Length: 492
Image (cartoon, rainbow, N blue to C red):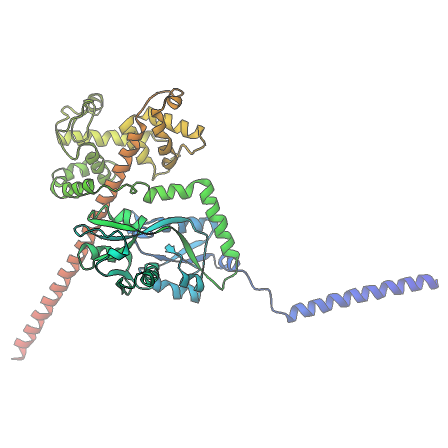
């Protein structure tokens, strides 16, 4: 009994000690502050991520279809990845977004942001996802400098930009180099000033330059200042690692799935090769030739954007209704005799009938594109089929799958379509040899022409709005003057 009593006493001692330990632990926890939520947990709790984004042609803009841009689409994909709503906070200049990032009003800042020493000290850079070159540019007509030592006028850059930091560093190497900094001037503002001959030189990022030279072909490149510069998103340096870790996974999956490559191709893949003469001729034809046929492109475009039909027609014939090729295709849309007959075109030399037939045929080809192919890629598959035949496009899709690519993505198929020239590939296909490389060039050119026509229309629409506002103000002013005169007459 004595032993048993001791045993139970010992057990009770242990039990009370355990209870006491638990009570003390709970007391300590109650007195201690609760563990703070991570940045990612806070985002999930509020169910929205605030993203500062730069307004510019490569990042974010509004067109006839709504919001668009390379960075805009990345932001939407991030929202889907995190299962969060995306609240965009747009600005024309990064200097306006950085204070909002520091204060926590935005969670990240995006928009083709290059890493600089000052930014790296104040902020955290997410993993790089895109690489660019930076070039010194000038308007054609002056002698091209080959180095900073030959630059004979000031180089103008936007203040508080990576271009400003780059030029400050160059001035230490070239003391005679003149640099002018302009507050709140973005790259596109400066390129337009360059074309207006308000400045002599400026810097341009390669992807932005490729886009804008379609509209301003007189912009010339002097030399490359910096190569392979990584672009990244900016984060608050004081935030924890939770969102940063997710961004590593996010961009890793985009790379692995090929989605990032497809997005790059969508916005930049068709503008890499710049042809000065061709661009000048196209802009001239838009002014002088397109107005003759514009109504017919609009009337017969069907479900397609008329500007796509017009761009295709320029690629086919340079809007020449009497165009003829050695292979026998004819007219402004360069129809074959069988296709013309199938589309009900009696005379291929009749511009209206030819446009109607070509537009109808392209609409039919788009209907043949499998539904699973993304809407943004469908026109490119159809145009390739217009050029080389649907059978060869199908062969290229099968070849793409065999070689590990995605047969439903144009960015992958266009890599393998040129292989149909090579016997080791086309001998295994159903339709055999094809000039697939020509089809790829054909589609790329049409995309460039189409983008240029879209830009021209948007510029015209903006100008019309400005003119309408001026007219309204003038009318209001006239009414005010009339009212004042009437009141003056009454007082007399």
